[in-house]
Image 1 (cartoon, rainbow over the protein chains, first blue to last red):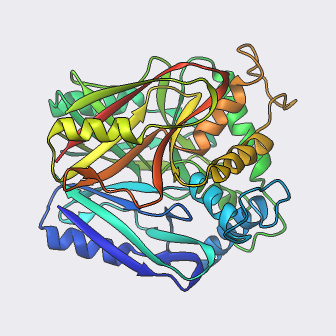
Image 2: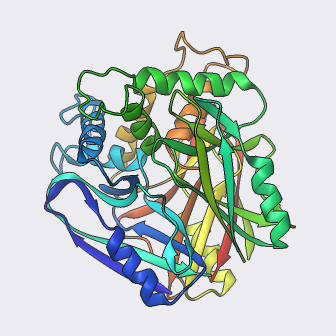
Length: 135
Length: 135
Length: 135
């Protein structure tokens, strides 16, 4: 089954999409299988991270901000704004696709794992993910 | 088919799990298909790396240790110890899920490729991976 | 279905393989499904990146070159040349496997997304990818 998730991000940051992906899995009726999520953009990405303490996500974003900073004088791809090129690099260092096993009708995530859509651009965007749910 | 692999890591480092994954593939009886591995933790991760010379894995770990160091004064998520926040970042920069084609009943890895569970915490942990093997 | 793609890279850089992967999808006759690509090497990798402006790929390569440089005095794995160890690290930071949903017989990529094989070695190599296309 192919499904779509659309997220309107308020801007830079990690936005949890676990519930939306779980809803698609439930709707598919698949009891044991595999759910693959792909984000259709190159300046936002996906990651599985700790869903408990928000400070972990804050520090994760901080590390990437400091190591892939805006206004790096080496950048030549600057026409779309200072936040565009760092976004592509941050996306390449994280994930564009994730595949999660399904067991007993649910995503087989660990207790502390959540699925996040990571907006790398400063302003909010409408982001689309394509899902494949199979057996 | 859904299967599980449990690894008791002795602490920080790359621990090869290729044989355990191959055992699951053999047990599944799948001749041509896809094997997906997901680690159910956010302070350990997965990677496919060179299985020949251990110095390559040593240098890979060293790079990540130097670039995502403990005691970074920017970190605020420090309650679980100085090795916790670097572990989450190192996990985000490597992989939580891997999908490997199966051909003639075996993982279609290259000659020098091995599958590794990467423990990022200082002390050993019991780590669980979920596998999906399908056609 | 299992398929193979072989690419002779001219040397370091991002080489687009979207058309070759799309050809395999078409040949499989799969209308709705999942296409997984795995590169069988540890000194080259895969990434989904912007396929429009080449300057984005240029800056992406530049960032990785500066942050994982050759001749890092910490490296011990140097027998295969100064470009070998950085290649393994660059591969670990990007992707060895990618899974892309198939909808209406085509890879469900976003408008600006292309699939790239990223050669990290200085000299050209013959690189093999294994594809699994399933429903």
